[in-house]
Length: 493
Ligand code: GLN
Image (cartoon, rainbow, N blue to C red; front, side):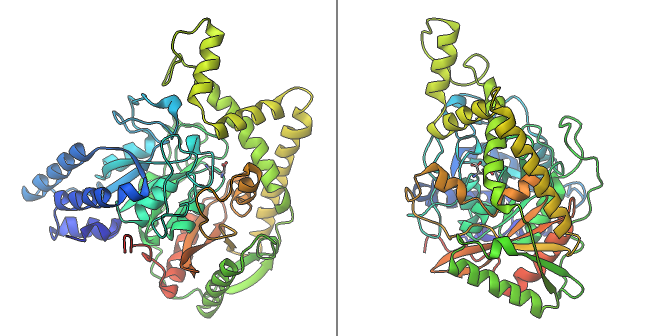
């Protein structure tokens, strides 16, 4: 069978433009790859096979007639992508992994989807996820868990586990994920992909079903840094429909890549991360190898400190739950999705629709959110957490004065077995290395840096506000020297 499905975003783009491959054969190869792998992986929810093939044929016809849009106009012309199910695509069911939205078909495209379509990308499917992006394993999807293509007994990470598994198993050239507390970076790490969480406000959240609005960001998940740069350029930019979206110029993220050394670059190593007791030795060793590689490429490595790291998990889970409780109040059984049968009263309608529609983890967060915002507890929890958030941002600002970017582990361990972590608190603690970046609103790039016991290890580069370009440039150089890009493409063996 054709192995066309293995090619990434930039390469497919070039081969489609040059006419070396046709969009229909590429799309068909990805769809066949989905057929071959989906039973084992469960990475996808709604698929749009027929529409995708039709769109691909339109690209091929245009090409045959010599109507080829410029690279600026359509940088992803004919390129197949997958979208996390928290992001709306007009006319395609969108559930955010939840029963409460089981029949919801959005009448509009998210900003990022508008951008992808305008760029010529072909949307193949929606990706499975933890319900409303709450989770770190994709076991909390209301539909079915997603499995890790490296070992299907193991979790792919979460909450964008469907996007990560889809990219890692080469069902698509690239995908979109969302990151509220690590949900792009951590599944990317656990599946051996590249994942970029942009600066808060870099990418519009219009059309993203909200979890915790002051943290949520959409970003690319790909098999190479170059592809992440390409996709970020497409989805970034100002959108007045998201009032937190920044009106800042979008650099050409591709133009700074391809440097072979890291001379003149200072990389900070946060002491609280690398010295953390939860950090697995195999993960640490792979990160250390990457650090040595950075050093050998000319980078200067300096120790830095993020002194409030130990409070990040508590602050995040208080604030994110508070925001989630407010955001999810809109699912009332009246306006969208699931509605309980034969309600006895309005209250009964609310209570039963929500009880039936939301899963256990989501209910836990709503209760926690209501609690930390309730009078008498607001000052003790929510306000305190907000203060800690400010201190964490200050830590990052101070550390990033001493270096151009920081290096850190993403997940303390490699992918674990399904069902292995069942205590919610233990699960929350797994996010220790990703959450603080979201509290600070800063960009982070997760890169595959090696393998430990046969499972991929990711490392993240954390940077200054709106400095995604430096992370991508450094990430490109490092991953090329390490030879870790695209290492996930071997499933099924
Ligand atoms: N695991 C974290 C949570 O459950 C982060 C999830 C995310 O980034 N969406 O909140």
